[in-house]
Image (cartoon, rainbow, N blue to C red; front, side):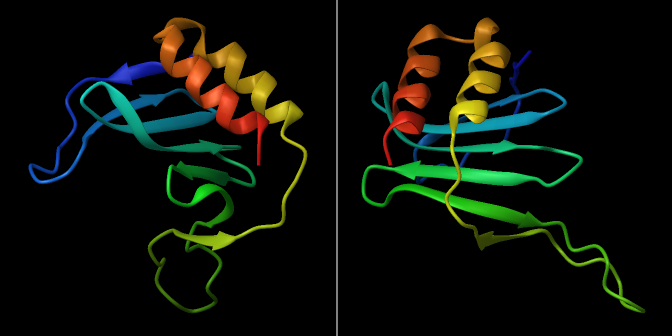
Length: 118
């Protein structure tokens, strides 16, 4: 079940950020004046991690997370997001809904709606 990490760094010039996490997912939302301006949902942690980013300007974008491992004879690199092909989000929505039971219902509904329309 997602739980909120309370003490996270904030950009004093940008929107406020909230971070929710569990063993399978991370959800980070950015908000201003009580309105969510963007979010990033990472899922599949520990296996083939992917990320969905939504913003009012760009809409929903899907990425695969390159964890920076597997570079023969080289040091681990920083994780990076790479464009990914679109997939069916039924499983993602179902798992998110299950994990989000403990967080604010308004946030859950907002994210779910954005995952339902591409």
